[in-house]
Amino acid sequence: MTRFDVQSITVAPMDEANQTLIANVHPPDWVNPTPQALYDLVVIGAGTAGLVVAAGAAGLGLGLKVALVERHLMGGDCLNVGCVPSKCIIRSARAAIPQDREALGVMSDRPQVDFSAVMARMRRIRAEISPNDSAQRFQKLGVDVFLGDGCFVDGQTLQVGETALRFKKAVIATGARATKPAIAGIEAVGYLTNETVFSLTDRPNRLAVIGGGPIGCELAQAFQRLGCQVVLFHKNAQLLNKEDSEAAEILRQSLVQDGVRVVLNAELQRVEQTPEGKMIHLIAEGKVEAIAVDEILAGAGRAPNVEGLNLEAIGVAYDSKHGVQVNDYLQTSNPKVYAAGDICMDWKFTHAADAAARIVIKNTLFSPFGIGRSKLSSLVMPWVTYTDPEIAHVGLYESEARDRNIAVDTIKIPFKTVDRALIDHEAQGFLKILHQQGSDKILGATIVASHAGDMISEITTAIVHNIGLSKLSSVIHPYPTQAEAIKKAADAYRRTLLTPRTKAFLGILTKLA
Image (tube, rainbow, N blue to C red):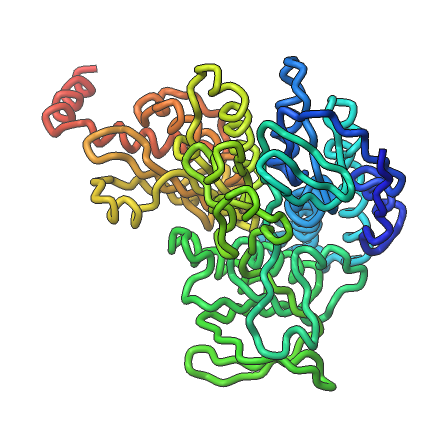
């Protein structure tokens, strides 16, 4: 057995919560097991994809020998620097905003935000969740957990420290990291990423957020609501570049209403340290400007973690921008090696990594025995940007349908026509459903609402199981709920089926009645 030196593994601040976190996801006293002579599956990376593959393979009851290798924190981005901490902060930020209270008849002063308490709550909840991803739990599941850097030696051996792990098949699930901004001077003045921002204990009074994608928008709004003065820089003319333009505009308006300064078409020239703070020099809409802030959060771009794996030794093709190259079965150029998650996929979501891991389990372990292989392209993938309002999407956008020469019709239901949205004072959004022209087949949907993420699954289910709008119209939705917008859309489709002759006939029947 090999004791792995983890003295360099720390998470700031090292309070009780973070000590608990480390004890679970990278225990200081962890002793790597004596390796098996030959593993059925070796998994490199203990983020969502790697954890699901390892647990799934070990839990099949087939006696498979599975090894899991992690060099940093088990749980990956999702637990440590992604979904869990960000959503904790977003929830606190929602509680801090009183902007709608007067409209609801509740008169109160703006609440006082204890920033350090918000961050402490986040760390506590993260620690409470961490046993699910812990080294101890996976050891109990029958997985051999090795803490250390994994490096391929040849097509059947992975080296972890001084230990060689021989394998039949391997899965690369090493994820991705925040990219360094290509802005002169930013390295010298220092900046935060999603990997370091959750270590803050003191609130920065002035915060610059670079990047108007999901991460940038979510954190810009959250930190503004927690008392920072935030300026959000985005290089394009629309936030959330690929999102529905109407949805992106509603989000922009919501950010501005919260007090965020949104600077679009921003070209950041350089950053320098001055007595006024970190000075950002930029050009936006043809205007030269300099803005001083206390901290800079870089939220634009992700880079795959391919370094140090020695992928050349096993014939796995990759590049530094897109990561490991895989086919539709998530198989690399080496047929014995698969990949899943952010290391190889455009969908950089926890639930996408989970779904991909399930494909890998089937394709690595079952397909050799004649059981059909699963394809990544067969997945129907929803996603959500957790701003206020949330923006959820699944399937095609209108622009994508046009590019593919697919004739579609769009049904749009403004939430101002939904009773519960009016009751909740949350009527600024909409539901859009795309369906195939001449058919009730749903091809895509976008929801902009406070609880859009909870609503999108109904439409995703309909797409996956080929449930058309006609059948959705027959589903009873409790009144009053905001999800009633889905039934309204389905009813709107049903009304399009009424021909003038049918309407006239129904009119006669109504009069006779």
